[in-house]
Image (cartoon, rainbow, N blue to C red; front, side):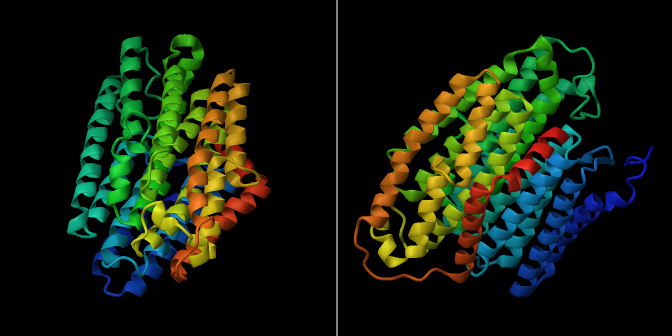
Amino acid sequence: MLPYASGQEPAIYLIAVPLLLLVVSAIAQVYSRSRKLSFVSIIVLLLISGSASLYLSGTGASFRFLSVLQANGFGSLLFGAISIAIVLIEVLSYGNTGKLQRFNMLLSFVVLGAFLVAFAYSIIAILVGVEMVILASAFMILQSGKNYVEPAVKLFVLGAVATAVFTLAMALLFPYDVNLSLVGALAAPIGKFIIGMSLVLFIGALSIESAAFPFNFWVPDVYEGAPGNITALLAGVNKKVALIALIEITMLVFAAYSASGGMPLLSDTLVILSILTMFFGNLAALVQRNIKRLFAYSSISQIGYILIGIAVATHLGVESSIFYIIAHMFMIIGAFAIVFWLESRNIRTMDEYSGLYGRNAFAAIGLTILMLSMAGIPPLVGFVGKFILFSSAVYGNLAFLAFVGVINSFISIYYYAKVMNQMFLRKGERHISMDRNIAVVVAACLVFVIAVGIFPQLLLGAASAAAAAL
């Protein structure tokens, strides 16, 4: 049997070639002696793989590769967005990372892991992909220096726990489908106890990776302890990969069984997780003085919003989750780029952000726009994302979940306003110049946040097609 559908032979290269390039890149970075060559090569690689993926999402093609990967509009759009996000991470890291070649080698494995998750046809591909992302990120932190051992170990240990739990969930389903395909694992008759146990274990494992409540205790410490560019990677890419895996597991493996009336456990579990994650993240952020920890708890609350769409489990719900995953990807990378730059100037706490507007107006205005977007203020992309998320809950007979989301959005405005107050209403001391590469990343994120906020159809149509493909 061919690994692809008839008539799709040319299109198979759109998934096979980037996969091969990613593997070659990871090996080639070990032998690269030039920082510029290493930088340019991985940027070109990401642009090639990302462009091929986005092109594939526009064609609507769908085909299978080696019974492990399946290319469709869902994976193509999300991997294309992740590729662009990692380009920004690479630009952010250039000139601010001592061992760039080693960093890029590990970054190649992060891209490869994201590729496996986005295009997964088997639960095994999800396991391998998520594990590659978390392990490569832990070693990125570790190779940054002796001062970063603690966050690296915490991330590694939590990744190992998540892998063990995920593997146990797979073991429960293995007797019923030895291929562990996403669409066939529950094809055979299975007892409700086995299904319920595997569902809880899958959600628990991916909640650790995505930092949903109550498995988010590692996030503030790791975010604060890791270098700023890697923190941007963790918040902008790693957690999004885990959420993509969660969508695939819940929508493909369990949603059909749940929709048939056999198991209401899926929606109830995700609704509870969403509410607790939103409240925990926002309430904890209210009392933070360290800016990195504030954004860490803020990003936890954002996971709660994304879970609304997954809990609804409708086309509009999945579409809104896809839209907000991509939107928050660029919002948080832009915010952490500014935080990373200020951290290099020993500016870390809210008090030290006093008068930032007087010292660098671009940084203050840029951070303000990004925070307003995360709070859901129009006409920015965060408002559009939250609007369709809450609308999906209303149309999915979960109006109370939309109400909880609105309440949490109002709570978030308070702690974002505290940061803005420090930046604009206090006098600055002396002007500080932003590094050119960081300014490029911030500008790119701001363009996305404003442009897609004003013209949401730029992304909404693609997100809708991706949800339909899933």
